[in-house]
Length: 570
View 1: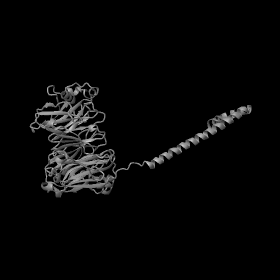
View 2 (view 1 turned 180 degrees about the horizontal axis):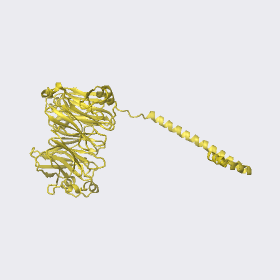
View 3 (view 1 turned 90 degrees about the vertical axis):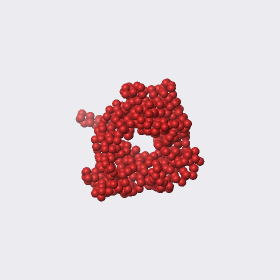
C-alpha cells in the first residue's frame, strides 16, 4: 500500500491539495464563498485581457496589410540575360571597369574609346577644353546595355579607378581618371567632374598611376591621395621620383612636392599602400626591385610640420621597429625585394593581420613573401610569365591560390594553378596561345572559384599550324576544381577580343561575362562591340573537353547540367 501511495503522489501531485481544500471548506462556509467571488473576478479579468490581445493583433495585421498595398516593394531592375552595344568608327583601350554607376545594385560597364567621327570636328575643345584627339570615357547600363553617360577625357588614359568612396565629400563613390602627361580628374557617378588637378602644379612632370588612397591627412573627413611623378624630360633614365599629397575633397595639394633620389634609372610602376602589423603605413613600388618609403616621412617633408593632430598621430605616427631596421638611413628607402627585374607586385589579404602577404613576380619566377617579416613562403620557377597572376580558390582552405600563365615556347603557354600555401602545382595544362591573348578571370562559388582562360587545346591538326595561329580562332575555357580533368569550351571565334572579364552583376546572383571586341588603340578605327552574357546561358551551350591526364565518371550532359546549376558568391 505504501508503494502504491507514493506512485500515485508522483502521478497526481495536486491531489493532496484538493483534499486539504475540501476539509477546509467543510470546516467553514465563509472562506468558501469568498474564494468563489475571487475566482469569478479573475475569470472576468482574463476574458478582457484575451479580448484586448486579439484586438491589438487584429489592428497590427490591418496596418501590415494596408502598408503592403499602399507602399509596394521596390521593383528590381529587369536585367537582360544578354545584350550587345555597338559603336562605329572607333578604336578602344584594352580595359574594362565594372562599377554600379547608376546605383541600381547592378554592375555597369565602363570603357574608353576614340571616336574618329567626333574627335576630328573639335568636339573635345567645345566640351571640355581638351585638345583633340581625345577619348570618351563611356558607361553602359549593366541591365540592358543602354548608354548612361559619356565624358571626354585626355587621349592617353593610363588608369581608371572606380568605387573610390567620398570623393569631394560626396556620400556616393566616384572615379579617378589618370592620363599622360599630368592629367588627374575626379568624377561622380553621373560622369560630372568634381575636381581636376591644377596642371600648373605639374607642368614639368609625368604622372605614374594609379593613385593611392590614403587616410584623411588634412582633417576634412575625406580620404586623401598620393600621386607619384617623374620629371618629364628624363624619359626612361629616371633618377628622381616626386611624391605629391592631394586632397580627396578638392584636388588641391597638401604641402609641397617631395623628392626622392633614385639610383635604379627605371620608371616606377605598381605603387601600393602597405600596412604592417603595427599599423605603420609604407608606400611600395617597383623600380627594378621592390622598394618602400614610410608615409610619415613623405607627410613630414611635404608639410614641414610634425604629426601633432590627435587623429594624424593615431594614424601616421605609428612606427614599425622591424621595418625601421630595414630602412636606409641616408635615402629613407627600404629594399623590400632585391631580385630584379620585378614585373608585378600584388597584395594578398590574410584575415586577422594588417600586413598579409606580398606576391612578387619576375619574368622567370613567382615568390610569395610574408608581408611583415618579408620572409619567403615559396618560390615557383617559370619560363616566361604572361601577365599578372590571378588569385582564386582552388582548394577549400580559405587561402588564395594563383593561376599563372607561362610562355614555354613560341605560341605555346602553360596554364598553372599554384597552391597559395605551399607553392605546389595543383593543376596545369598546355595550350596554344596567340598574341595579345585576353587576361584570365575568375568568379567565386560558395566554397571555391571558377577560373576562365583563353587559348586552344593542342590537337594533331592545329599543332602543325602554330606559325599562323595568330590568325586562327581562340577559345575561352572554364575550369572548376571539383572536375579538374575536364574543361568547358565556352566560346570560339576569330574576333579580336580587346578585353574580357567576369563578375557578379548582382550581389550573390547573376554571374556574367563581358567581352570588348574591336580595334585596339593605335589601329585603324572600325566597329567596336560590347557583349554581356549570363554565365549560365553560355555554360548551357558549351562543349565538354576531356583532358588526357585523367578521367571523369560523368557524361557530358551531367557535367553541363551540374555547372549550369552552380551557385555563385560575392
